[in-house]
Length: 159
Ligand SMILES: Nc1ncnc2c1ncn2[C@@H]1O[C@H](COP(=O)(O)OP(=O)(O)OP(=O)(O)O)[C@@H](O)[C@H]1O
Ligand SMILES: [Mg+2]
Image (cartoon, rainbow, N blue to C red; front, top):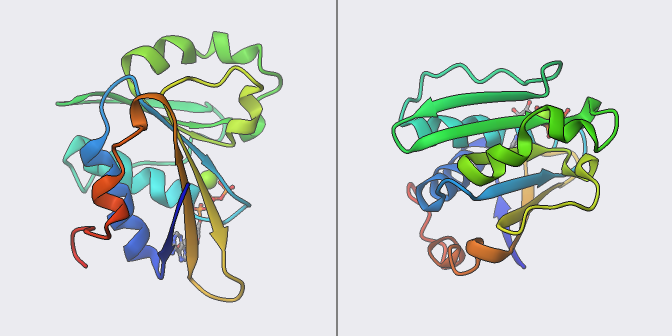
């Protein structure tokens, strides 16, 4: 696991952009952390970077649970499973296919149960109380392994 300080929203945005550069279809990111930790902010920045379009609207898929976007590097799904009833609904949402064919960002991945995709990056955002500071904890699995080198050495663009 690597841990990175994110001093402000801008730092979260830069981490998302760096992850989007190294990501490819078939890889997913499981975004954990408490309410207001910044999961949706990170996902929004990631989607825009993946699409190469800073103006794309990225609303929280609170009620649809999933929101796909098509881009030049492939399809990306933004999922918020907070309201998922039971893990069986994952099939109905088409998530299994998406895990294979798209980049998938999942908020509240604990709702997936135990059937986690192999090629996943577990990213947990920790809130430092009373400030904009966050700490990102990243644990790569499967094809994510070895992809965080650039991020680990602190060469995030804009720093
Ligand atoms: N360093 C930071 N990184 C991310 N967000 C930050 C940071 N500092 C402040 N914020 C603010 O914290 C809030 C994070 O909200 P966001 O909706 O992304 O949280 P969330 O983890 O998705 O919550 P939920 O579980 O309700 O979906 C935003 O208002 C954002 O501006
Ligand atoms: Mg959210």
